[in-house]
Image (tube, rainbow, N blue to C red):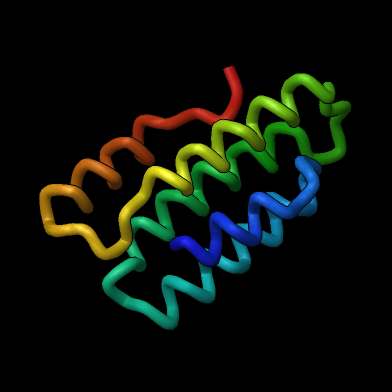
Length: 100
């Protein structure tokens, strides 16, 4: 996950970044089946955001906030943690919102 965080931290906060992030999650989930569930949840979270603002005006404050929340969320995930840590990460992602 550190690679995803590093990549994400170097991107712009636009919708294209979020779409590309979804593609990266799909690849990671396919290549590492142990991470498939968490990748699916993260992809759904990002997908909801993209769908909400696709072809609609996206205020800079909303884009910045969503990007920062996603960046913090990805940074907090430990893909190599024990079962309790992974469950906590899954639950945190499931409860997350990128925008209010």
